[in-house]
Length: 212
Image (cartoon, rainbow, N blue to C red; front, side, top):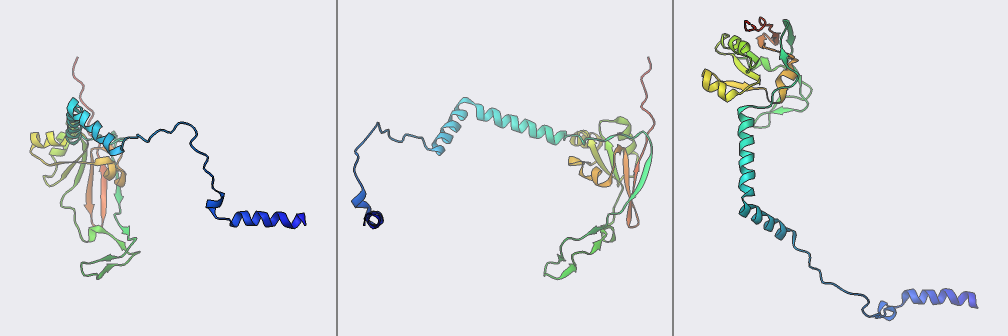
């Protein structure tokens, strides 16, 4: 009889309403109110302090200075040296499309998997000349080339050179073009030859050392 009674008591306890089982044990220990400041209030307070102390103006000025410096003189392309020997090779710009190319009205122009050579539709108007803008020899060489050539710096100050030379200068930001073409030394020339690009690294005469 005792074996059957125990499970019955347990079941009854589980089915009993919560109010019947709840007890008020009263307040124990010290209770403190929640006084945590709102996060937005903290941010706003900090911004006001920075504004009043002049720190905001200082940070804005520093950001402006760094931005102007980066525009005037971008980070040089790493791994590019002055050419000490001539090198020439060909580059095939053909790509394989990963997705369909469609027109404005949805018409299929090229299907995914198609091999496309950009030179079939777009021709280079002039050579691409890569050079170190801080090297007077390379700069002089580049300015003697075809006037339609695009001058692309791997080091130097393009805006200063544009003002001084009255020519448009570009910059190989992040070394993306030199990496794509496999250029390791400058000056270098990229020239179209039919459906291919011919790339040349030109070894200029050694720099003249000043007489002692």
